[in-house]
Image (cartoon, rainbow, N blue to C red; front, side, top):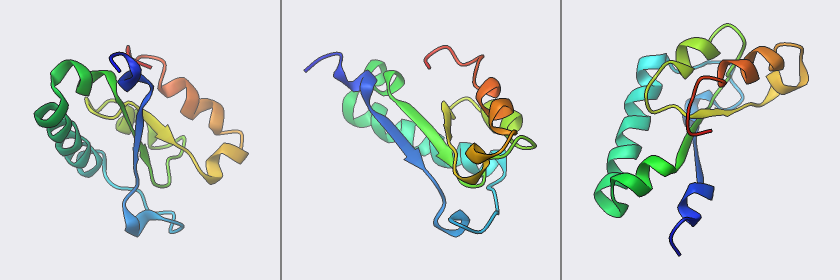
Length: 101
């Protein structure tokens, strides 16, 4: 049904980042997110694709969240171990400027 697509969240985490502490560069993450968004645009339309959130996971930390969040197609984060530390608040605050969250 119409409107439910805005409830869908796609999470992308590079397989090589799982459990390694290695983060994709903001440019690498944006490239994949941009490709995912383009796929959605081609298959469900621009309005629906833009209503969906595509979030990044992969060693998101306080020292890289602002650069990642500045990328056009990164709508938020899937946070692992950093969610158990004080830096989690910095990560949360980095998402404040995205309109569709």
